[in-house]
Figure (cartoon, rainbow, N blue to C red):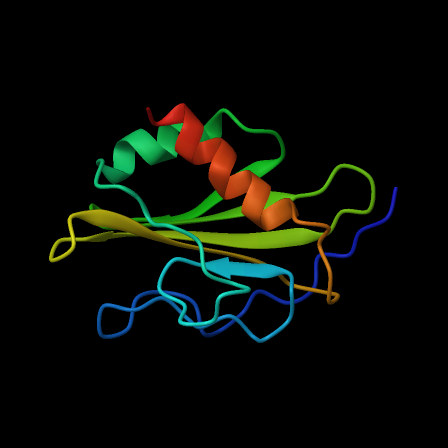
Length: 125
């Protein structure tokens, strides 16, 4: 099929306890965002290993980086091959897992990133 992977972003990771801000397009959610359109609630304060198990059980997922407090995975869409970058950061001060999920290409994602985070949340309960 198609392959719209795009370039892996260079601004990912945790910097000063924060994940990268959303770019202002409606294809990104971030639990640390101040913008109501991209804001999503953080995940419960579970171990990164628990989140990894959930993520690995989802389709077309590749784990890119993992530490005790951070997980970065790529999700690839079935039809067009679009890639979404999804990050999880175990925030020790807030006792939650901060999350950011963003499409690499395009402007709209038809709510896919938000739905994915909520699916992961439901599997952690």
